[in-house]
Length: 472
Image 1 (tube, one colour):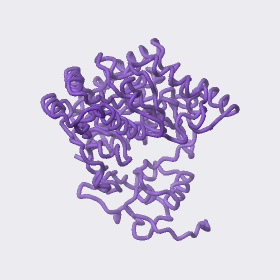
Image 2 (cartoon, helix red, strand yellow):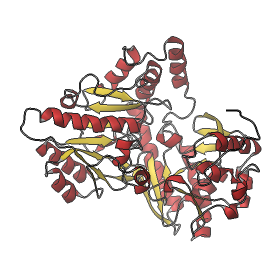
Image 3 (spheres, one colour):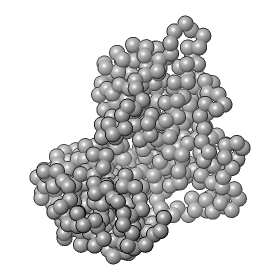
Image 4 (cartoon, one colour):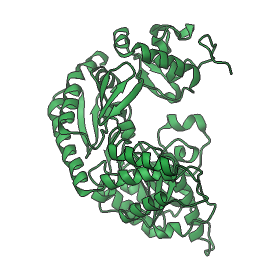
């Protein structure tokens, strides 16, 4: 392929890249202006996968898009598949809880790369670990052992309910492995019995477990699943927190495993009750179903406990992890009890890149820091402080329905779409996320954030609230 500035590119005008590129003079002629972009009746531009993002007005666009950013965004529209509804930012560097874009603007980061950068950006201990290991050994595949992989597995086992660990490259892949492990466990457990093993799964409303074909089958939002059906059959979605419905279905004997997030991140920052999780545990134990906790977003210190389920005193058979474990490098992990591990044989699952020495050495450094009691106590303290601050500064606004969450996974639920507030914050130098049905502002800052930075974030959020009045 010959690349040039005059390259003619076929482009999906509904793709997120096209949405971002309407500010560029090189945008496709059909969608050269905001007025010609396809949109819903309320002014939101429709993007791929049924996601929606509000098109900023001309004044907003002028403020956000710098010349360097515009050039790179134009290139992205030419060469990247349009699977993401990206913010019109091109980030270039980060330190601590601050990010800079290519045009030199600075932002306070309350996204952490979607709850990934627990130690912030460019943590010196993490950098040292990555540099040291890169000089020594980066990749050998899982045909061989490496010390960092074993050291990380040992730490995870010592710090959790688990007896063994399987590594993957992401949270989605961890959940995909958990699906296979649950099926294999049931086949193994029923091998000496004259009956068929249970093969079905339970997941819950507002849940998110990933986008590969198995994980997306366990994800409740239809706009993630419908374009790819038929997906894996045998999944029933129940109301999150509905003890009676879950108990009855588990007792049917058809359920291989129940997948549940102790705290739903993507779904809107909803926390399970202890009674709900205990009912799942008791019901699964009574019939031999497995209980899987997806802690990809809420685990590893985010709640002020190393594991979100610790505060409930209820433990799973399988737990999936990912996001912050390697400090921004790609990793996932499946933690299992011995009874589950006993069902898994050579060749049942695998990955070329998973658990590589570079990734695992970085993860050991992250885990050693965030598992310290004083670090976790600090997260809990800052979480309480931030919630009180948000209630004080935002609670009087008519659009704010609730501030909820645990530790530093916090949601601000609105009675309108959150996109205008997210954009207004961005223009004032604060990066935040949405969640739920698009009406929740999701706040998942680096766990190292200071109270002063939290105060600054709360002030920007409060000052940006008037942006919501334009869309009511």
